[in-house]
Length: 252
Image (tube, rainbow, N blue to C red):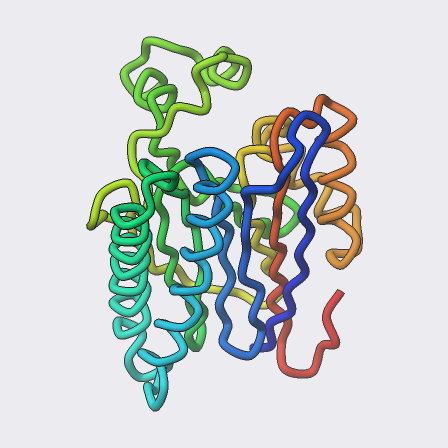
């Protein structure tokens, strides 16, 4: 299995700074998107700390680990790295008053052998595109999603609700966090999209599948960003696309 990742980020049309951060590390097989909150200083600081701590912790925790023989070690490392990121952000906010209340989403993938571990907090999303069809892998930790799950709001209404940015779980707002964890099989030809809600708010799952199936993956991220801006660009827009090739395939 050979991994190739591409990233794209943009401030959007309504913000004057970018509070999103990302990791796109082919060598480590680690990819993540974080969308900060807490104002100009806080949001940017929180998302950057989240991805930096995640990358550092995963590098250290996976050193010498046989991921094929022990895939559970990857999931455990992702969970602990996310918890460490939450603690680091929280402690930073306690000693710097202007950063009080900062936090971030964090959605990441780490590959191992023929599978991956997904760790998720907040409303950034992960999608799988397989055989030209997309599937959302994560469930938003948001007030809107709770209303949809309870049958009080339709998915269509959720996409346009003015309350869609209210999240119910984040990294760093409290000293610890309980991330969602998934371990999934991987197939050659799979593509994965990680994105902040500044992108996902403008696309249905089906449309994401069509766009990725019809583009070179190296160009698809920028295409998604441009479309999101054309449709309003109300927030920062960030995505990471990962393509899984067999060992003989050069990638798209």
